[in-house]
Length: 151
Image (cartoon, rainbow, N blue to C red; front, side):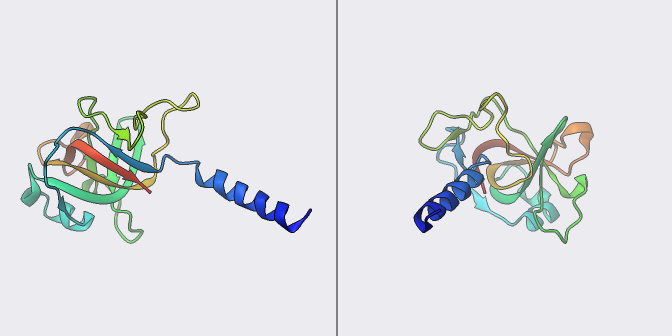
């Protein structure tokens, strides 16, 4: 195999494996014109009541499953129990679309849902300390999600 073909094959393999996730920026028209306060995950969790009803931008690791939609601190040195996690309340009232397309965040692709589980992401939304997610097991929630950037 020539050097050029080997290089082309390597670039193709790397390109295909890099596209396995749902990376990108998804936005909604909800909360248009709102200014979001960027805050670290640790600060948000430790001072959640100070941020109640405020619009924030926070980064963490998203996990989903049956009765599960949560953002965790993506640091490996932090306890990842529900009391250190935020319930993420995606709403059909605020449909998120991939920038420049009409593709929704949870739109079916290849016969399956978008794969966003266990991805690091930045989320913009409104903090709600009264909403505690499934079985009231989270410290609070982020509602009115209008921006998701998946890494």
